[in-house]
Length: 275
DNA sequence: CTTATGTAGGGAAAAGCCCGGG
DNA sequence: CCCCGGGCTTTTCCCTACATAA
Ligand SMILES: [Zn+2]
Ligand SMILES: [Zn+2]
Ligand SMILES: [Zn+2]
Ligand SMILES: [Zn+2]
Ligand SMILES: [Zn+2]
Image 1 (cartoon, chains in turn orange, blue, cyan):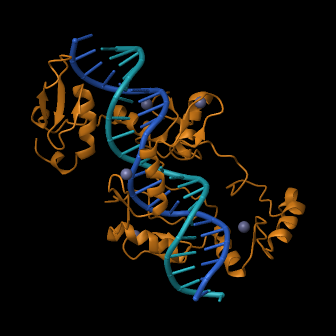
Image 2 (image 1 turned 120 degrees about the vertical axis):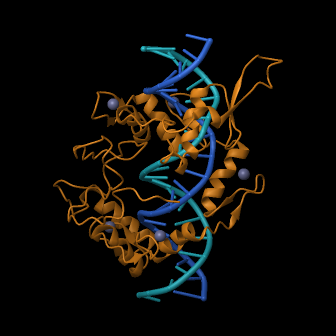
């Protein structure tokens, strides 16, 4: 699991970390262009403000809210204040940990995959991805999770709870990130531009898929596709519809093109040298 | 009609960050 | 102090039903 992207691992040698993003930046198939300060996949181009990267300003003073923050500190009894961002903490050791955000320091690293973390507990939690430990279980569907908060989110898929409501329309969503994605349908923002044609997309992952058009990557170019599905028609009595069933997992699709796309999910080795 | 592709929601995995007990 | 675990938040990604253009 967890295939290495070409560009991960790299720890920013740059002093000026570009928003600390790595991830492949090379969506377009050649060149390097695309330094893309745009964020990841589905993104609200971020409220600027905090942790802002790159250029100038480097406001080390937290001007505006100094008074407010000081007051806050008073009230909450948080005597230790970060000089970079003016956040305050009750304990010095927490401030020390916090400061690593600004220094970029990540003292804990995984011996398995060499990823680095700012906190020891983050590393410990990360190790579960290697051990496969998933201690939390959904009572309704028995699915397991490595983090209890992910389980809690998952449970909403059973309860139907949708705490995140759009202000622009009457839709609601079970996850905040879903609402964020939805908002792009109102704003029309499409931060991800294809470098090889002039289309733009609202999500990075969609651009990635789109690039298959330019790279020519075909789901089944290397395989006898006809052997990878069953044509079933068990619904014939009602609708006359046919279904294309995946031979690997027996899911059914109304269109063969859906199945082709689906087959990408268990593609893998068998696309090697066989014809 | 079929197929390929864009759209958009559902949802999972993993990490970021903060906090308090010991 | 540190270590550690709990917990909320955020980021990133995958999957696929549906609409539509070719
Ligand atoms: Zn700070
Ligand atoms: Zn690792
Ligand atoms: Zn469940
Ligand atoms: Zn809306
Ligand atoms: Zn393109």
